[in-house]
Length: 115
Image (cartoon, rainbow, N blue to C red; front, top):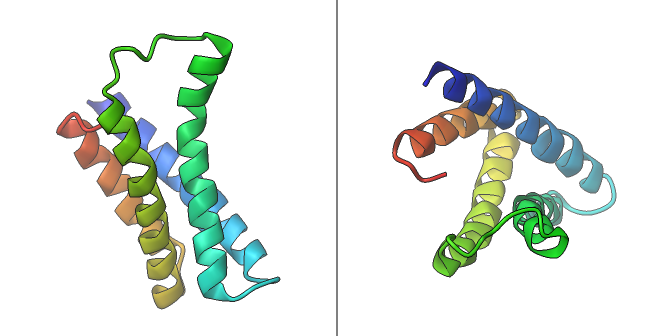
């Protein structure tokens, strides 16, 4: 459990720095904050799909045991989550708020076997 908690804190911190910190701020330099939020959320969702694609294309694993419904749910859910985290960051003017929420989200999801 301890290793799982540390892992999810590192993942949550890293993803928030990359997607909300770097990507959203970079995109918002060339478009509106709202569009930047949508773009970083699409980027966030696509990166969460990448491991599944690599497993299929490269033959690195067997996803036959993974329910199709799970995969169909994961991408829209990560997109919406990315939008919500981006909105939270924009409203609070702090990257720490989505970092904390993301880390807690990941730990709770792991405890309930959702990841």
